[in-house]
View: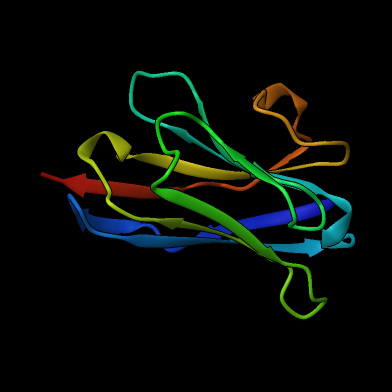
Length: 125
């Protein structure tokens, strides 16, 4: 199995940027497709974006497309996925979770096998 730990959350102003990290430990990181999800208070968990095992393919939810970028470093001593968030909006405020999928990585949270504990992102207007 793989253990995931998010970091990098915090407070940002609208129009600003944050970069989240998801550090993985355990089994080989490159064996997993990865994704970011987020959940705001009173709302369902929302798909943010996903990246394939090699890092050569990404796709995003409509609400973040063009503003957020996912990348990953599969080096054994790094094993980390990133979420670069630019032009932040107050509606981006949520707890952000990273997740790992032993298969393909989809927009469906139910397909993911492992989850981090989440990191809070708050965007002020």
